[in-house]
Length: 325
Ligand code: PSU
Ligand code: MN
Image 1: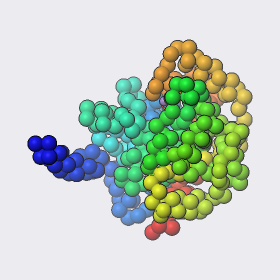
Image 2 (image 1 turned 90 degrees about the horizontal axis):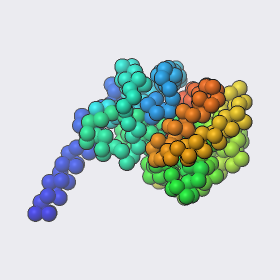
Image 3 (image 1 turned 135 degrees about the vertical axis):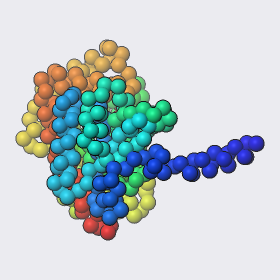
Image 4 (image 1 turned 120 degrees about the horizontal axis):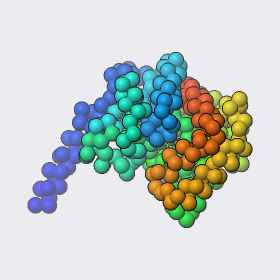
């Protein structure tokens, strides 16, 4: 009986796993680009649903897609809509995500529930990496990844983004790690997970999202898109099954307001603790409070660095596509 059940289950799983028509909806522009081996960049959507306020979330999502297109690359924003993983969104779908107040934050652990219930949500870095990998997009651009939270050694609040980077072969382009997190411990855990971390540019200094320097260094640096592509190609050829993290420093002109943002982060982290904010709500709460406390300065810097990451990530995707096809 058990044998029968499990073989039926096996058939069910293999029939449904990754069937684009059942679990995935790939936008035609993305499907065509992939079929023709043209470069594609994956983009996340928790930043839209939980990372930025309306309407800047919507304008930023559209600007980022436009930047990617202007680089000759196809954008593939990932989200779960009514229980299907969408890879590439229409303008109406972006609009829905940006305005909705009920969408969930979808990380690896949330995927089964959200899909089984036909719900909708923005995918985090970990959720987006899973989708990008299933459909064959090797490069993914975001603002900042999750990490080990401050006091994480006691709370064990460690983002699933870090373990995802350890188990899914995707190159994530980000501006490093926000100093709402414990950057030193985050880098330690990335090492344990076998994630190849490199700063993009001439310095090995590991950027802290709003500033070039976190006080920590990356093990490596890559000078340009070609070197980054070479690094990613090597990781893929080795079949390591782990990810690569490329940390792109924020453009100089936006890196100024460091201390004010740092003070706001300190206040927001303390407030989150006093209010007993836990689990998936911690990061959105802190992002929201830091934006309020800096009168929008953190949001402006955030938008500028995502634009920059989109440009750099697209150039990397182009260089990688040339190498592999
Ligand atoms: N950091 C930001 N903006 C964001 C996020 C992180 O500056 O929007 C989002 C990303 O989607 C990231 C997620 O994957 O938060 C991490 O959440 P958590 O810390 O709960 O793992
Ligand atoms: Mn967490």
